[in-house]
Length: 238
Image 1 (cartoon, rainbow, N blue to C red):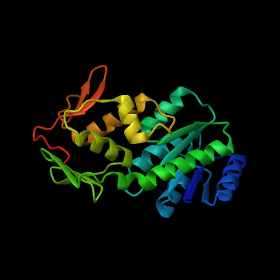
Image 2: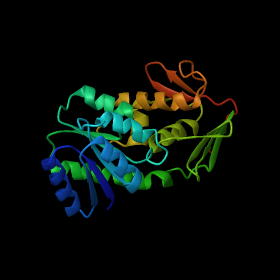
Image 3: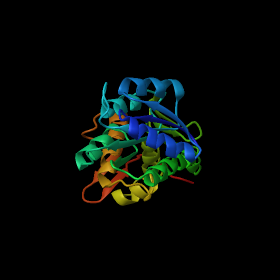
């Protein structure tokens, strides 16, 4: 069970979510606007945040962006919800750093299942990186035990999914991964995401590790297939 922060401006939605999550044994914190949500996220450090797109002061997309750019909250999984439910909301939400997306109206059972799945993934995320303690490539280092990425000895802030994506590619230099393979390894097929999510997260990783993200040296695009990691030191898993 976990501590869940719910940010929504509709009282009936807040009470519905609170009732069903507490029935599953979760501790629930409620916020009615973006400012309250950001405050509780930083003070309470919840295990998961349920965030409505259309909240006021600021809206959900801006809240998501701010959470992802704060070292204290950047790794908290975010489940975004929206009454509009169109594809643009979903794509923009994922681009801002949301982990999952569910349109309104939703069934309490589906919401609870998504919460459980995201909490389970987060709980199991770090132990999955046990095949190699450290990976290196020309100034880029992944320290698995410390869950850190360093570039030229400078610590770079990574979300769990960005870390897992980079680790997956870097652990097998030269291997071409399809977008579907990366979805399976990083997100798992239990999540309702599509291959564009991979492209978005690759872009985020490139922005953090590449001198020129438009001309990447580490993560190369293999046109029509997917991505591969280029490592001149030929660092491989044992």
